[in-house]
Image (cartoon, rainbow, N blue to C red):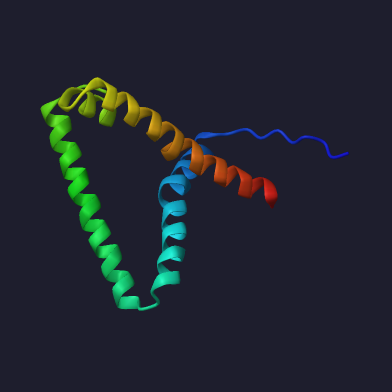
Length: 114
């Protein structure tokens, strides 16, 4: 019978995990799907350029909203104040389940398989 191994998580490991979760997993996963549909390097670069510009525009919007409504809470706070509190609540739960828990679970499953 195999003994359980206990791991300690230090700040460097935690930071690497967050970076891999936010950047690495998305880049490697999305690129694979893009290459299934299109193998032209120019069009793939154009897709990434458009995605980068779109992400930059989103960052500008969030910075403007943060300056206009300086309070902690991020997307939850913005949607609750601008539209309706139930939309902010729903966004928070979707972000928790789909945005945070799912990628971590997928990565943990891959780590345990190796």
